[in-house]
Image (cartoon, rainbow, N blue to C red; front, side, top):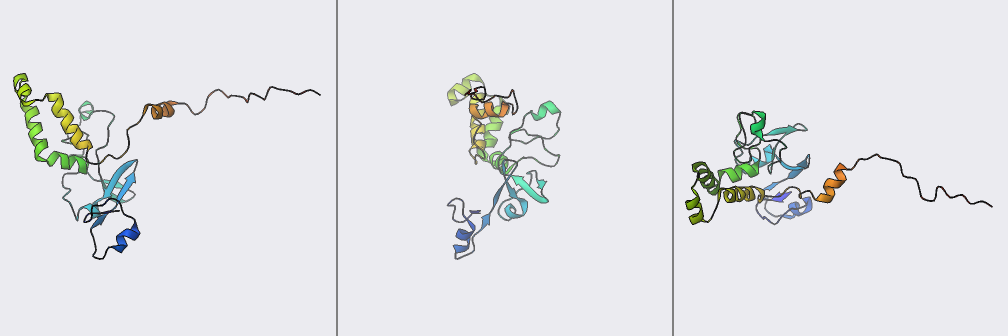
Length: 181
């Protein structure tokens, strides 16, 4: 549970009950390792038009952060994609998550997208101190700075996930010893 009025971080139900005036609160849940919010809770506090909704366990939800996708939407021939992260969407939506909507509707994001679409020349970029790759990195960092949902996978975690569960059985080293009397 998070109190929108105090903005002190997560609260337990006892802390929420101790507030004298009724504060506005929302509950962030986990679904398939991603942070989600129920539509009925977030609609009271934020306009979520254009954000794709999903139904999980008969509850309508929206994702808080963008979800990584394995293949780009353009490769699949998808007609509609998220304006920020290019994840494939249903026809009537513009954003895949609340984080993408906030990033995509910010004034800075729109300016950066216009600059990238125009294709600023190399001399203009050197005067402005940036490159097209720099602009893409700025946009990516703004999206990721909304709230990181899960820590990035490390090399050790990748090794463990690729390790087979079953393999050649290993016997105990003392199993071959026989003590003769």
